[in-house]
Length: 466
Image 1 (cartoon, rainbow, N blue to C red):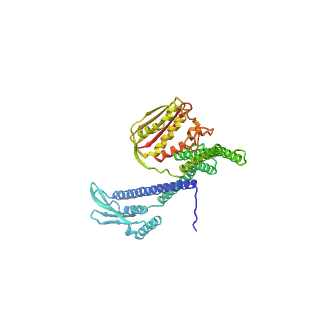
Image 2 (image 1 turned 30 degrees about the vertical axis):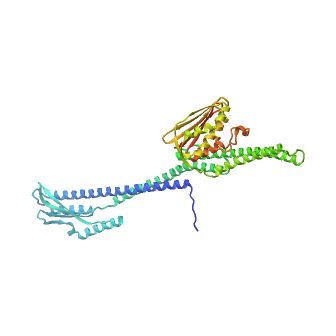
Image 3 (image 1 turned 90 degrees about the horizontal axis):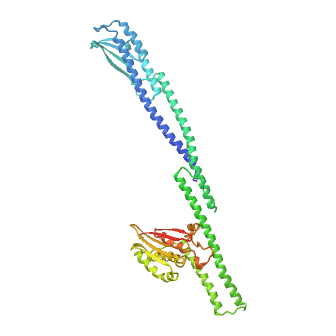
């Protein structure tokens, strides 16, 4: 049976900070300790060398200018001094004849000293490769060699009790500093993890509210972390979009409930009157019923279009065609409507070949131009512009009509959204034209935007990749 252990983000971040600090402090401790050991070993070796030179100087002082020994007993005293410092003294004359050897006179004492030093170093460093060593120095006076001193010692270096105590104190200080830094890292890690996870926790709570259907509130705080701010903005945008869609669906349900109710009620009254014999089922009354049925059919067709847009991908049959030529043909088609309303239509187009679904692009232009004509009063003007760029084509349809209120602009591309709240289909339409336009433009990888102001007209800008 596999058990999945889930850890919170705060705990993961805290553990990460602690582990990183542990790694850094441990690395610093190892490197510092290694460098300290190397430096201290060099210091001990230099100290040993200074001791050797001191003994050599003492022995040298016991010779006169001619190389004669001033006092043979002095070598014994110097030998005892050297032995107390872990050195075995041997003195030879210029002909390498032995004048004094501490190991000959005190062999057992010298052996015990070296053995003790070896045992002591092995207790500190079990794998330490130390051994008895000898080093010779010339005795020189008046630039002439008058003898030599050989010193035996345990090497390459030796730690006495004071040295070991010094190193132990340093190691304890290092360990204490490491523990302190670890505690500081844990506290800082918890603090930083809390700062990062707290806003994420709020975002999670908000997404759960959205999941439960509450889109009203927004996240009102910001973070110093750029990615978290992006997450906050995304959640707020999601809530705003879902709220707008919810309002749109409620409005759609209300609109169609109202519009289905009217023709159905009319049909019911007419049919009941004819069934009861109140009205004679003549051609005029039957035609009236037929008109109501056709009206219901058109509304159902609108709903089918919306479902198709939302649930299916728009299939494109792309070819190369000239956008200017398409615009000119559509303008000719709408000429009767333009003349009937005495609208001044200006086209400012250039030849611009694009690769797209010609029929779908025609539908976009037709919808935009028909809306412009519908909402432009008699005597006003409409302008269609085609701009050509290196990588895109731009279609602009502008008018001097009634315009769109600022609060309606974010919703005009939503399904069934109509600026005309009176539900008058003769002016407001079904509310699916612009949503179809946006779906077609999006499927081509383009974009559509709107600029509008009440009583001053509207401008729709369509950008399509060439």
